[in-house]
Length: 385
Ligand code: PLP
Image (cartoon, rainbow, N blue to C red; front, side):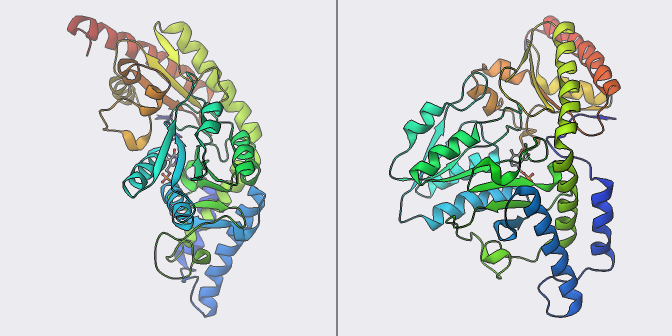
């Protein structure tokens, strides 16, 4: 198998797995229990928190563990809206967010918020003038993702943070697709709230973190015990948190060298595909991108058919975000970048990772070339889909 869907999830790093095993086997105590067996588990959670804080350039108290990126995004958005409901009800986001943010914004609209969905350029970058122009006295939250999960395009979050800081508006960024891929520490992005998730950086599923800058107004959105400074009730997933911290350490420490390797492979892939296949477009090509992601649109055929064709040959790719699989609607991200529904429908995402080597890339290009040619022959006989 050639796995080129690392933006959906990554394999568990063996060192992260090793770190988790004792907490699944012998040290399975509840971190909230008062006896020493529980205290061992508590210590492991707090050591993991310290490790994540050191990697993020923040303090231990600014790290809130959650079950995943989706939950952390929900806590950030709903938590700020709840904490600031007497101050205002306007939220600003973009039209290219992951559904974890986009659908939360849509739900917040039904609950009385006014939400502005900012446009992006053809390259997939948020329009800064539109962002600045959208802010008003009622604006309580700006949420703009760091790297897009479909195109890999990186947003100018530092610039946005400078604007929101001047205006005293809380800024959240979803860094699920950039954490561990770019040599950037979480707290240095300048946002007040940052989401990142374990299973996208070679950690286990079931652990993520929300960085909460000190003094950021945030209310709990679930009720229960006092876990996570009262911000996220529920017994901590100790093993997953320990594995997340171990994986994050490796990912952040190697982000620069691994990024350089992946960028070279990704560029090789795009260069070869562009010269071998007619009618292909690389989405977001001219914008800053995380090094592992390539979004390709092929004329006259369906991305879904390409993905199925690649699967038959043992190559895992996707049409966009994993959670959109089965969604017949063309990608909202590519549509926002100005692609027609037909162009967006003809798109696939290839996301490289730690095990990807040059041979995988070359095999993928060959298979993609023959698959696209075959599908185009079929569609020219049958007429366009
Ligand atoms: N945000 C982005 C940008 C993502 O790509 C994803 C997952 O694909 C999520 C949030 C959701 O993260 P999780 O799968 O950890 O809930």
